[in-house]
Image 1 (spheres, rainbow, N blue to C red):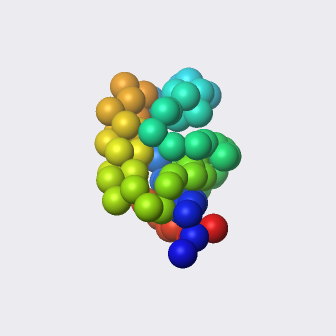
Image 2 (spheres, rainbow, N blue to C red; image 1 turned 135 degrees about the vertical axis):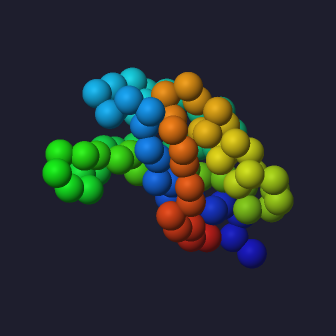
Image 3 (cartoon, rainbow, N blue to C red; image 1 turned 30 degrees about the horizontal axis):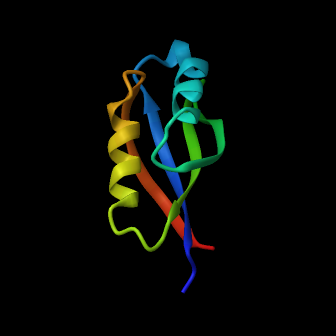
Length: 87
């Protein structure tokens, strides 16, 4: 059984004018290993943030902890899992 899961999170920032601050905040989370965080245009000049975060597959609460930590960031409106894959 693989011991790592890569989560792909779709993150909406509270302030679209301060996306760089949101990216920096997401990179600082401690509940998972942040592999990549990038801004992604969705149309009409609006951008969201996508983050790739590694967690331990054997820890049943790891995914919940990552989502909870990201959603508690003051720069984040909401975050949801867009995809995941076992590594």
